[in-house]
Length: 474
Image 1 (cartoon, one colour):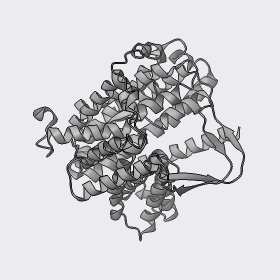
Image 2 (tube, helix red, strand yellow):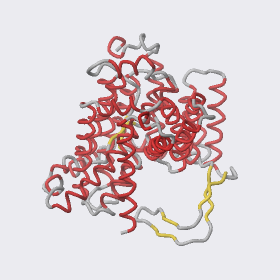
Image 3 (cartoon, helix red, strand yellow):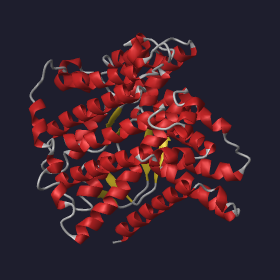
Image 4 (cartoon, one colour):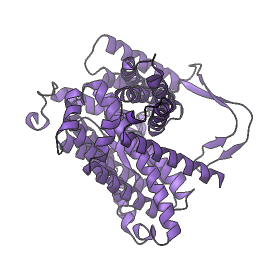
């Protein structure tokens, strides 16, 4: 284990890696319940089958990252990608779920292709340092916002307006929605606040494993508060496992891959869907690697030099990109939405995770959920949410390196930060930074300073936004 994961070289220990893996797992475990809830809205995809496919896709994808790249990042079907699958591909664009799975597989293959052909490597090299720092800080705000919501610290005020209720129970409104701080008069918010205070105290006191210990304490406190019901825990519940056969490999069925290119109109529709999904998944992963990797030092200057100057998969960053690309295919094969590198991995990295052993622990924990799903289901989001707020605090420090007095840097950096947090979308934040970086260089007559790859990517983002806008009009 020491030799394979190079623990001493990375200045870490087995116990630290295990704690980091547990921390990452508990901060992202919500996906095994949220993902089935979203995908099962598609008729023919049962909750049980998607539950199993989510676990298996997460475990396999994370193991690929652990053993091939040896970095502490975990993977699972992405939030946002699952909503795109259900509400855009199936409900808006009219694909049946088997076709949508086929699109996920094709998108994964394209990601592998652009990784092997070094396109993703060139994209990373083309991003200016100030934008990389803005991406790190933006992801910190993004993660913290998730933490504030999950901790029940926020409530949302709405003025009068018209509402459209979606199939999943959520609503689209034309009224003004304003977030405000809760009154902390309910057990959910109180548990989140207790967990946050405990973690802050432990971190300030430099207690090893502070974030994980804080999560455990929050779970225990949640029992008397009535938020953790241990009576619901069932042992060895194997009932749902075999239902995986209902969705696995359906991407390759007669209703899947074969139907995507059946006529010219379907081909155009498929190409549009692929472009949108490819941009989102690709830049979510790049943003996560840059954000968590630069702040923690995992992808340091030495690694970036390897990425730039050496051939093959010589750097951990490049191996991580390839592992993410291969894993992105896994979701569609197993019968779920696109698998991607999770931004919550930053919680485990903050807890000291530095190698693939952290990822391996996460993968094992996912597999343990198959017969022990109810055990993990009792953990309330308020118990893990404070960890995300703490991670946001740690990651925002990267913005100190940005030259805020230079508008050439300040405007794209600020838009990256703000759009990522306010639009609740990592790839949209990156798109805003890319586009306005190019616009400002054009205005200033410094076209030659725009990297061609960056310009091309910004153009693709613009095309994608235009297509989305036109579809809404129609």
